[in-house]
Length: 117
Image (cartoon, rainbow, N blue to C red; front, side, top):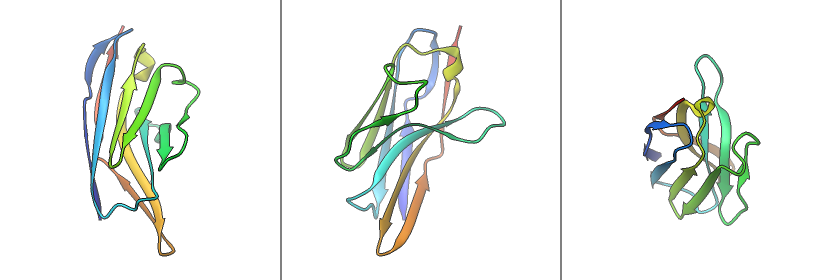
């Protein structure tokens, strides 16, 4: 079992910055992919950025150049710059991996990011 704890959300004006953090604990595979997703009201979650163990980051087109994902072992960060009102959403931390033939997928509780115009 893996637990994910997010922090760093809040209210910011357009053009401002926020940094999200996610701490993973539990039985985490050393070969895992961690990422950030966000969910707008009444819409499915969408990938914002993700990073595999030792891999290159992957970004959604809408955030490329503004957001930066980083990882330190079991901690994941998302630096969000030049925030826009359209970035307002609930942001979730995710980790997924395969271990002994089984697929594991875990989510944090989510943190609200609100960007005012």
